[in-house]
Image (cartoon, rainbow, N blue to C red; front, side, top):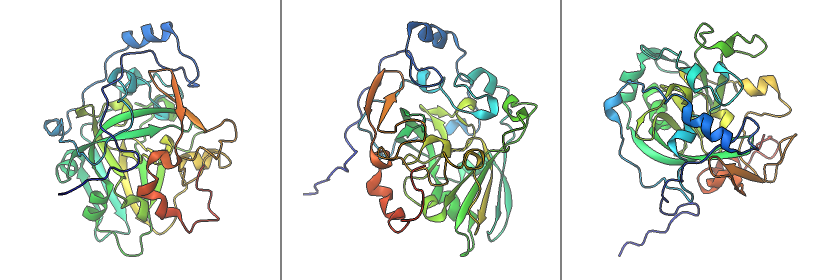
Length: 315
């Protein structure tokens, strides 16, 4: 008889949480006024890139120990600095043109290519996974992402043996994205992973959410989801994947290196310089829960960092 032992963070998915108000920009206040605002906001626009692939089949290996965040909350409480430094950027993000969307794969690869996003997605093993999402600001969501393992894109790209990092870059269109007219930010948004991280089972390129194509305000058509790291690692609306032997200088690392580092792994015992990371607020519920090391995914990823004693792994 086959006996399946669940992983430490894995229990059956609970029912979706009831509709509730959500937090303001600092992630600290709840109120009835916010609920009224949320109800009046426009619904997220449906991207139609490879729309027939959704809803994708759920991968049962990736379940949750908490209820899913309600769709209306998750799709209207978004960090996307290209469209502003506040959370309610859903309406502004609709200005983003996502068709056509060209993706460049370059750097240390067998052959550099540029491919349409829809064509790329159709070459990938699209599935749904339930993931935690933990922001460095100490709020959290539980999200049903659809997309494909980042490892599949790495295999498709055929990097050379000397490539040790994957650099990802978002679009730069200040005419569409008003936040990019703020010249003091180092646009375009740039992120990076080590190749070991990029090949990890959890690393995921999200192309959909809640059984539909991912909306623009959440990073259509391609965004990174690495659930053991703080959310600022999740670069949105990716246009370039570059394989390199140089560690990338990432967006937030360039802005505030004393507060935001390259690795950005979740650790409740290591505070941000300006606030604690010991607990997190579940958006839409008003509940605070203890933060878990690696956001609850340690058994998948802790081995990646076992010899990095001199690295700042948790900022």
